[in-house]
Amino acid sequence: MSPALLFSFVIGYFLLLLVVAYFTSKNSNNDSFFIGNRSSNWMLVAFGMIGTSLSGVTFVSVPGTVGSAGFQYFQVVIGYFFGYLVIAFVLLPLYYKLNLTSIYNYLESRFGPVSYKTGALFFIVSRALGATARMYLVVNILQIFVLKEMGIPFWATAFVILLLILLYTFEGGVKTIVYTDTLQTTFMLLGLVVCIITVMNKLDLDFSAALQSLESNQLSTIFNTDANSSGFFVKQILGGAFITIAMTGLDQEMMQKNISVRTLKDSQKNVLTLSTILLLVNFLFLFMGGLLYLYAAQTGSVIKGDDLFPSVALGKTLSPVISVIFIIGLISALFPSADGALTALTSSFCIDILGLKKKENLTEKEKKSTRLWVHLCFAVIFFMLVMLFKWIDDKSIIDVILKVAGYTYGPLLGLFAFGILTKRTITDKYALIVCLLSPLIIFGIDLLNNPEWFINRFGISESAAVELKSLSASIFNGFKIGIEILILNGIVTFLGLLCISKRGKR
Image (cartoon, rainbow, N blue to C red; front, side, top):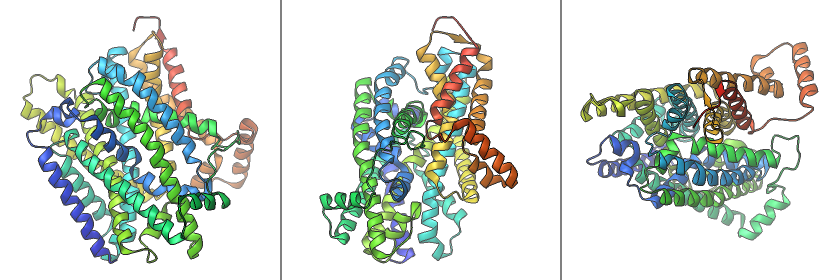
């Protein structure tokens, strides 16, 4: 199928989103934008959050991991499930009890204004980097496989996509996103199921035979029992649980959709439903990855990693219909993470940093004007960060996202854990210093544990590289830090807060 025809489907999809946005943003106000007037249907929120939780990284990168790690990513997914239980029965009751618009208001009531703004600041940095990394992956695929042949440069692709996202989130915010995410999740899951069925038919396999074939090719191993490996199942499950607690439960983007539901009970239903569905959906993505590797081997292809799914789906061996379904599924996976992040960052900056809701001297019209300008500024920041990722051009975006999350969500995890698990008060003015020092300490530990990363990027002398590797081996004895880096960061932050704390009332 020609790139121009594929691109026309992309434009048609955008127009559909704009129509939905037009009807859902009528009579919207700041409360509609920030928390959907607390009237969102929990079933729509749960279904739409599937797309937000997965994103384009899951759509492309997770199938690509099967070739090197089998189904080991499912260890992390099991951890996600336990993390959602903590969110449902620990964090949500707290947020509803305090009637929060921004979840970081909890830090203000517990510790003080510096902790509050520190938490919001770390969220803004975390979400901006994570969302733009995900966006870069999808935009880059569209650029390579569709728009490059049309002579459209990468920067123009990124700019147009951001402009269109800006258009349909500009007025309605969360109120609009609840509906657009539902639509986009439907297309994404439809694309996944259709692609699975198509490749199975090409391989002449049913579901049971496909599983047997994956097992015989050693592509379906789930549990890694090597305790020194970064993929050890205990590390992966614990890491997955804390990633969910931090990246969902302590993330304004994810939680503003949950607290837009009218009651705590319905919000808990949303989280528990989402956690169960994600187990199935992630398994299907891994199953899809296994099928793609079997199909690539049959056709003589050696493509691996992030390029596997788009190369097969947009190649000439499958039908043109699959190309259309893949592209629609891909951008459907992109938008729930990008539009939600843009809206949440605007909400957090307006409420947490600017204190917009507390400024009673401003009219509703003036507050709305401020919010629109902030929204526009974050769109510009998104564009600049996407271009930065293009310049870096890292081939493993899912690793980048998990690494960024480990550094930036760790202080948030430490702050909330200290507030919930202890009765101590802290010297609030030192909170920012503790939260900045913790990632720096963890960065030093991580560099020492993974000297190859430092050596490959900074090209130090051969003798220095040998000494660094020897030092790393003597300290860690082959033990590799994986996604549990988030937990370590949270622990260091917790200990730092303990050092600046004293006995007191909650």
